[in-house]
Image (cartoon, rainbow, N blue to C red; front, side, top):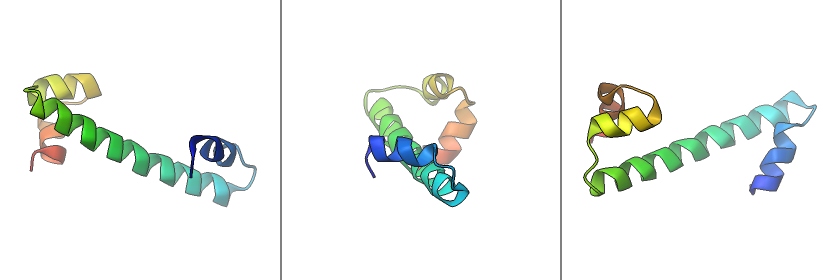
Length: 67
């Protein structure tokens, strides 16, 4: 699903279509977050810096991504 298609689906009057689009958006956001956190860690960012950038605690981001 490309961004134009996603945008159209998010504004659909059919709740089923809109909700599936929201699910796709959540999955995309999770993928972008995971790759950005991995990049930040590879560049030496601390968990605290990453948490600050995401607006969450360092413990929260470490629990989610600190494998």
